[in-house]
Image (cartoon, rainbow, N blue to C red):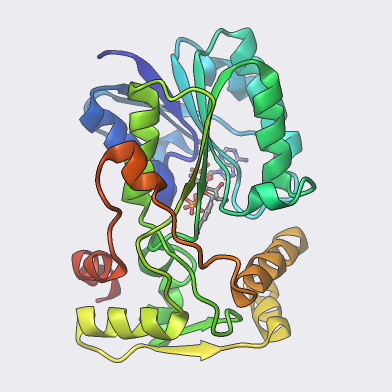
Length: 283
Ligand SMILES: NC(=O)c1ccc[n+]([C@@H]2O[C@H](COP(=O)([O-])OP(=O)(O)OC[C@H]3O[C@@H](n4cnc5c(N)ncnc54)[C@H](OP(=O)(O)O)[C@@H]3O)[C@@H](O)[C@H]2O)c1
């Protein structure tokens, strides 16, 4: 198989896993970033510059690709305005398939930015697959929660006692690569890990994996959002975060689905296995 897939967000937690899974499956990859010099060199991977806010970068990135793995900038209320032109340009250039990463529950509100992108993709006429993953396990090892664990030994979030069926980006990536390889057109998958865990349980699992006590310190919503503002998060993203963690506290992120196994033929990774595999990340 020598088809080329454009991976957007290729430097991010999910994108890196998707590049790897596509290579393993036998695809060539164009790995897109606003800073292509930061894309790790690898066989069958070509780094390309693509910035959703710079239209001059879009057509060159989309040229000569069979498929596009599309992500939205994280927690960005402006995602529809940024991604609709990409979908339209992909259609014009004859891209066969777009696999779009939305988020679990996005289809519960027609006004949510990711749902608006889903609708635009479905209406575009380009073959599509929609992935709706739950919160990533990698948020704790390489994403925004990781610095709290490393520097303060605690997870500070307004997650209450809500449970979440966290999923590894490796499982999402394997679903994405399978969607391209098997041309899973017109399909929508709600992707979760195998267990719903609250953040006290997550802290306990990480503690066990690294041999050091990590705790969960529940915050009030206002304290969490104030902390995010102090870290320089734009107000649109702060409000997005408010909605996300209200959903966690309300139990909306606890559902466990079998969609990973349906697509890949194997069960998704447990948090325990993830924490043991990534223990070095918290050293
Ligand atoms: N994290 C979660 O728990 C979770 C759960 C469900 C869904 N999702 C969704 O999954 C996707 C990936 O999340 P992630 O955690 O992997 O994100 P991440 O690690 O923060 O990476 C974000 C990526 O977006 C790219 N990006 C940002 N602004 C861009 C722009 N203007 N133009 C082009 N690229 C831009 C960045 O590339 P450069 O900086 O290299 O340009 C980076 O590769 C996001 O859409 C997120 O909403 C995340």
